[in-house]
Image (cartoon, rainbow, N blue to C red):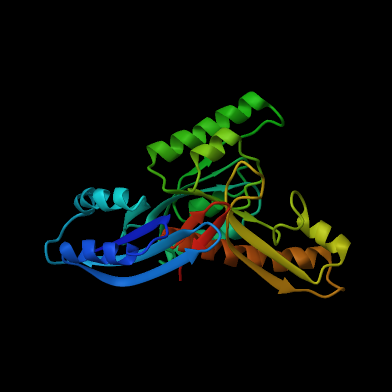
Length: 287
């Protein structure tokens, strides 16, 4: 049986990084299956993703990661090891719009996404039947207007669920609530939002109405990591569609919903496959 792992790293660029990585792997009889690198001239940082296979000594991940520590420290690397066979444990947050949720549940059930949806949670119950159909627990965490205490309680439930269910990734699948700075910090690098607009234009509420009022000829959607700045987290994926002057708001919304599904699915796949490395307020996404 082969053990497949993924190593992601970033560090200040200097001569010998690739050699150091490959030399370490070779010393443990670990085979490189694929490798991708990127040098960011602006930051002077080097990024790398390596997929490997350990067969000879059947070394397990904790053992490899412990031996790796010396290399990481020497080269001032920020690095992570992942089990390539392990599916990401996902919690999906929703409000009333169900197109993204339905698509993710279907793709996960069919094995098209390397994720396991552990639970769905919402501030409305309208989408509970979607979770019920796939026999996935649905948590209804109500919000009462602008009640700050209630919002704190609701976010505490989310944090507890992430910890107790060992959630790897939280997906905001058209979850129409602003997360507190404290919750954003807790979920840093682990929460993906789909914004129904081609950022950075038309931020905030009702972007399709804003787009219609401006007579746009392109509409789109953006998947990004959640940050304390609303709709300004590092972007993972975007897409657009051409529209004509005669499209109604309802038609724009329908087209936009399709783009949202596609963009969110791509972003979640790349994240779950550990192809995304955050680079400041941007991301490096390896094919």
